[in-house]
Image (cartoon, one colour):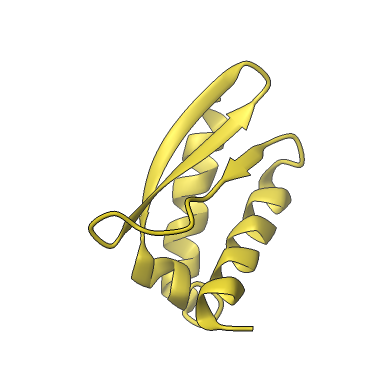
Length: 79
């Protein structure tokens, strides 16, 4: 498994830890090193941007993990 796949799995794990009801769509390629990620819960949808480096470093860097988790918590709470 490469770094990208590990980061993606960790990202999905964080989302599931916050809410099982949220559907996530992560693009296969970043735009300008940023991923525009769709979070959907029922009829509500929210988009967040996460840098490619943050996704890759998510499994191994606790600072990035904390930052991404906080971003997800805020976005999911707004759904």
